[in-house]
Amino acid sequence: MWAIAMGRRTIITGIGHFVPPRVVTNFDLEKLMNTSDEWIRQRSGIVERRHVEPGVGTSDLAYEASLRAIQSAGIEKSEIDLIIAATLSPDHYFPGIGVQVQAKLGLVPIGALDIRNQCSGFIYALSVADQYVRTGAYKKILLVAAEVQSTNLDYSDNGRDMAVLFGDGAAALILEPHDAEDGRGILSTHLFADGRHAADLWLERPSCLDKPCVTEELARAKKFFPYMDGKNVFKNASEKMPDAVRIALQHNGLKVEDVVLLIPHQANDRISQMVAHNLKIPLERVVRNIHKYGNTTAASIPIALDESIQEGRVKAGDIIVLTAFGSGYTWASAVLRW
Image 1 (cartoon, one colour):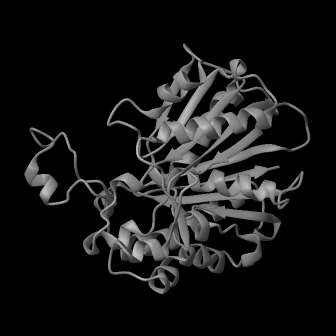
Image 2 (cartoon, rainbow, N blue to C red):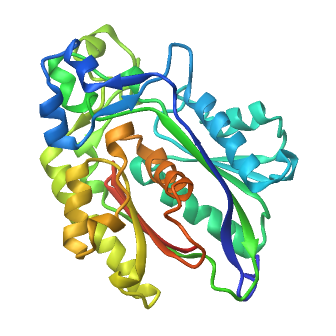
Image 3 (cartoon, rainbow, N blue to C red):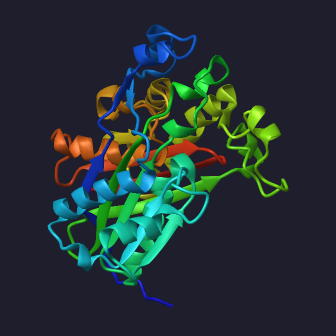
């Protein structure tokens, strides 16, 4: 058993993100399916998203984001002693992207751990990394969240409700121990799940329930595209994310008024606005960038955090709260003092 050092917290010493250069607007999608810019904006707040070019995988985006985080931290990549990767869209069914990022960075043989909690994946991964750092098991962890969803969406009228929502992107953090008594760091993380609703938002196939797991019949039935019960997901996300924030604030003896920035998972701008309304937090303190990137799943929160830092919205000592909801159902929250 590792002993947790008294007063030790985990801090973010570097951060970076990367999105593919190819911009896909709502008007581009109008050419592929029966939809419109107005329809997409009204229902999601999305104006454009990024899509990879053929042959570019999730691990490629993760690698680029990792390089930026390493540079931001001012460290040598050889100092990293663990990689944690969060994604629902690995390059291959297995292995996960953790080992691929490790190989591309030339960091053999350090450990590479994959977290599969979809839209909540970043906060789940942050929670795992925080425990490792606090116990002294690892000193410099690379946490990378990345997604390529554009290659497995149904760009027909049947699939438009999902196809218009998602984009590709990645973000990465360097996490290190912090022993100074200044209150900085990850204050707490809170994880929740309800597997009874797994089929509300899932990728039904391929599945080990089938033998063989890939057939022409399943392909024709479009079982390999993601499915979402939009009404149930919307309702639960709008309720569970504020609940998770309240639990996190109460745990740390904080009030909504103490929160300088709330960064929700960028699933739908209407959800973000409802979360803000539920918590009675002014919209100007809620980070919303879904109009530029769409839903980048596990990568959405760290991309938004990096952009907020670049825009000067984050200052030393600020309380930042993260919250997510997604497939599983899973949901989560985290409180940081910058």
